[in-house]
Amino acid sequence: MAVGKTASRVRVDGVGKRYDGERKTVQALEDVSFEVTPGEFVCIVGPSGCGKTTLFRIVSGLEAPTSGTVYVDDEPVREPNSSMGIVFQEYHLFPWRTVRGNVAFGLEKSGVPESEHADRVRQLVELVGLEGFEKSYPKSLSGGMKQRVALARALAVDPDLLLMDEPFGAVDARTRAMLQDELLDIWRRTEKTVLFVTHDVEEAVTLADRVLVMERDPGSIRETVEIDLPRPRSRTDPDFEEYYERILEGIR
Ligand code: ADP
Ligand code: MG
Image (cartoon, rainbow, N blue to C red; front, side, top):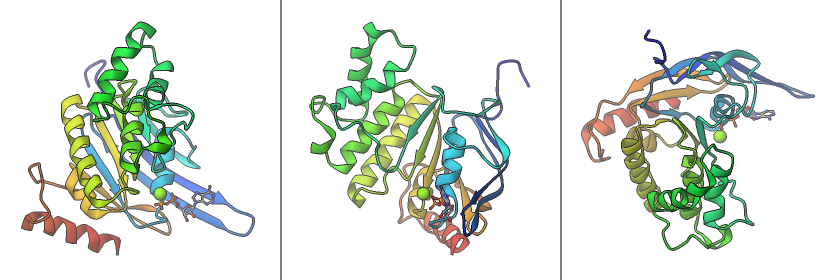
């Protein structure tokens, strides 16, 4: 391997996670291993409770595994760092900050000089299609708009890796389709690596280069499905339907 070049952006190596409760123990993850190459769009799909969020939090460095290791750019992950942009299902916006303030938060922790913040925020707001709402507060925004703010904030530090946990789970179908299109567009233009968690098989087949299909009890990867379809993809394409059925079968 050439010096300074990594073959995998993310490497999850034998990761397990056990929660020891007072009355019971949950094996949330068992022996999960996979890699994500630079620029790849990988979706993790599986039923509720199969450990998707647990895996997401471990890859993000928000939680430690009980066994195994996660590497990002060949470094073991111990805490979230600025090479990652993280988007949660529940937005996690600061209610006391405007759209501009929320997006700027991402920059305040970055190495970007303050003189460049205003320009950068303007670009990010434009990138996610929120021009005109810079002074709005989260409470006045729809779910889809809040998630755009969260995405812009995550992109503020220009992370190589974007980690998303069911980011479009709480918005209506039309908005979701729009956000999916926009995310693919941003991914294509910025060449970022995306690890995207969803319980929605249609969403996974629409977005991913590769789908990791999980099962529960214990949470583990059941199969990996490469989606060899040109983009934009359509649900009405028979090949799409074939992938859809195959993956759905896997998680039933
Ligand atoms: P998913 O995101 O796929 O719905 P989770 O990762 O949230 O699944 O949960 C996987 C399993 O781990 C579930 O059985 C859940 O109840 C359990 N679990 C998750 N977080 C905790 C926790 N902090 N303490 C105890 N059990 C947990
Ligand atoms: Mg979850």
